[in-house]
Length: 428
Image (cartoon, rainbow, N blue to C red; front, side, top):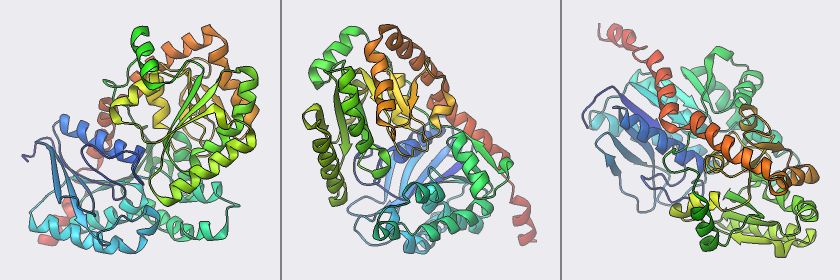
């Protein structure tokens, strides 16, 4: 790949990272999409980009996406899938193997951009070895996740090794050259609970594919509803099977919503592959039975990629009921498709929208409050029309991926070449 504007190394270790990722597989969701879309825009803007990840199962060592973008897979930790929470002890092997590949192939990079703390810890060591800047994007924070999971069984908490994670994040945030937070709330949490100066952090939100997630004509929406079996009184939720997503909370809000809208249903597309994911689904079905709404829920699993935009367009309302959501990519995609959206207060996205114009916001831990917001666009045509038009306009202008990539590259440029003087001194 010929170097043009610069050469970037992006590191994202967990999940199934590929040019067309297998969404819904364990640890394969919003972050994987984020990294790949950003990488594609960097490449489109003339940068040489390598996305480095873990090689496991029968994955090839490299995927060439286009002339400027490829995925490099580094083997460590054996051939089997490993949850991100269980990879703590393998990062040294990744760093060793990654550096060996970089040096053997004579690869050269201007900047390392790491994603999530596992890649951050590894990326910092790689950046120090290569004497280049390291820009880190946390995606989520150990401090917040530990706080949010307080009260869960001790054996479950132990599996996350929070003390180790938070300590490593603390050191990482001080060692890297800059942090890109994906929401103002996340930036404030890093400043307050990791005691980091605010000028060490820049907030840049995730982006959307503005060419794919668009409003559609009434005829197209009607056809999508007929094909997908989703109607105007349906609330649509999509994402990985995970505790923080709050699917049990929206199930608990459904009885109150049905008192306001007797025809309302919940269409829940929760991707579940592992035994733990399937166990969570069974828990949520038990919550639905206890709440008396089991018959009002359409349980769906993995959504085919080609159906995703139409699934956003078809329902009456899209909901993001997360207990904690660093950003909420699905909400922005739904807004861009012209669907009224109700998001959670437990995340950073709601701070960027105008309530009642772009979207609605409520606390999913308060079922009646959340149900009232879900009802608003179903009950009032003027509210639905305002959210559909203004929400789509806002989402497309504020979160298009090309604009997000340019903002990110501006950060990289500020640090490019920072360590060249050190290298000259060493040679001398």
